[in-house]
View 1: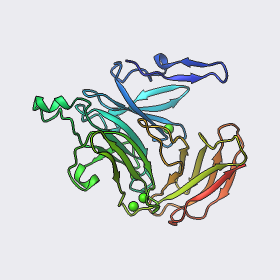
View 2: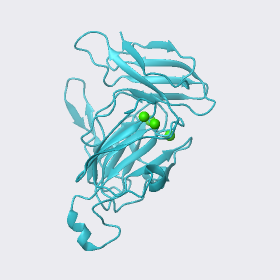
View 3: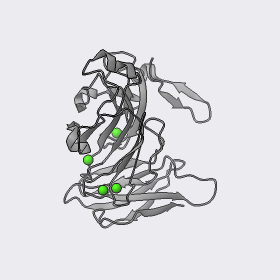
View 4: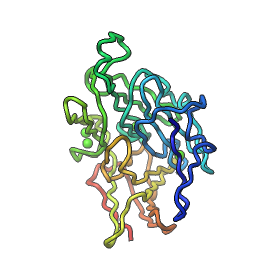
Length: 282
Ligand SMILES: [Ca+2]
Ligand SMILES: [Ca+2]
Ligand SMILES: [Ca+2]
Ligand SMILES: [Ca+2]
């Protein structure tokens, strides 16, 4: 079934644009069986790119946002065109190892326990979750399961929420296993970042969809407050930033969704592990 890419016509409803935006099919022109979706500025140009998870026998798909409502399937270019046999659900693009580059977490698990009777080593009910590490280039490099999760785990995961559970500045994961219930993955990367807690001044207003930009001496990092994504999950509302070694932050800028107004804040050094920074949007 094709993905729906809907453009908001600002009070005039939504227009389905996936047939010409490129978002309704993959690079092979095929419709996929979408399960979850994550939006983040993966390529660092300021707009939101998309990761979709798909059913067994399909890849997960990365759509790079080219601007002008055009999406390009760059799945193979970023290196996630593997593990087609896995059935994926939740997905999150976040900087789990705190090196300044977005990584990717994918929760996997079959829906049919009967696949165990097939005795096919590739088609199993319990499957490994996957963690891919981002870098300065576009490639995502898979972290071996035992290195990523401490052991060769196999689960049947569904939803997953990402947030700093233990308040040490790095992002942990709470996932739902279909049989075992909640599973917590504590992040032990020991590379904390800064968490920014956006609040709105006054009742009836929300910081949702606000964008935070951190300008450093090397680049510009964008994070958008979109906590409701992945698969049936809601993440930590605090936005997480981490920088490369030696990188220095220069400025933090808030872009509320409903206006072009900007709030500027000078920021000396995001490398300081600190309590979350609370910012109130005027
Ligand atoms: Ca982008
Ligand atoms: Ca990273
Ligand atoms: Ca943590
Ligand atoms: Ca930790």
